[in-house]
Image (tube, rainbow, N blue to C red; front, side, top):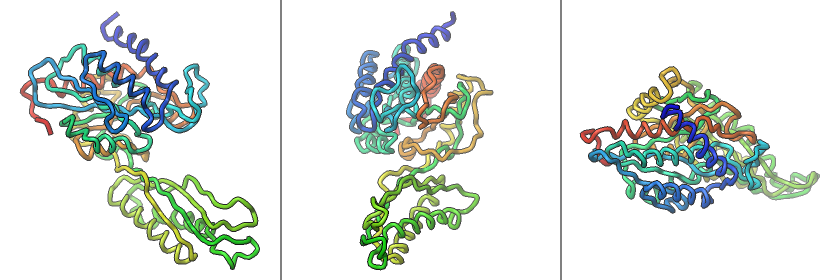
Length: 395
């Protein structure tokens, strides 16, 4: 058996078991205490300098290479949190926690970065240093900013940052990487409409919050179709509405929430502004009070050209050029790694895995791609930090 076959067998055995253990014990955003402890324990056991509690539950490992220092440091990032949803896979290692489920593959991302860190710690075949960033609360679109606010890039300087996410729409073993927009900006909105309740038989004595909400839901559909250039991309969707409990009572309060997805920052600003203006106009027209908030949001995930090209070249070596996709449609999913890419140049790569789509109740991470993800991370470090005379000082 070759060295590469030995590595793959070891990964699928030991690290596959670790991935399934994390899957069976999922933790939601900012509650990743067990997962973070597993990460920290493994990093320390590998001789990696380890820091906990970064951005509340994040972990950062720092590893220096054995080659003459290049003065360059890069970061690799994985997300650790699970979704707040129920699992319906029926697997023997299915979630043991009702309402929490690794339905997006973060268990696999965490395992891949642990595996890469341990392998790099054994060889240290690079110059400079690498930071292993294990981020909490990606599903809440809050963990990246929390780590940054906690001094991530000041305490652990880096020149570039890279991340990998599984992608069921691509075949197992394919890697998709391109410059520019990969994922959309995502903004959650919450609307509360306060009117005056009353009897359903006497609506003239009330100020109907439900009528106002109905007008808003219908009217908001024209924000994209009548304000956004048809050549651009934007989505505005309502995901929840609530109001009233009895068929003959007009409630005084109605609420709704939804999401806005855009590629361009100018379009993101436009759609949010038009929704505010529509809320204000309908409030006047219906004599109600409408409050609009955007509690969660992140920009589009935009890969930097140089780093995307470099990552693509590394992917060519890992899976062969025929399995590297450099032309593919950007997606309306969102990812708060985008915030890190606003602070540091880097690239976000998609690793094909087949199977159910992310966030589906029957989704499961494909353990067969663990060796691919690990090799991709390792080669990124060894190639980028290859020689002592490389350009690039700490940024």
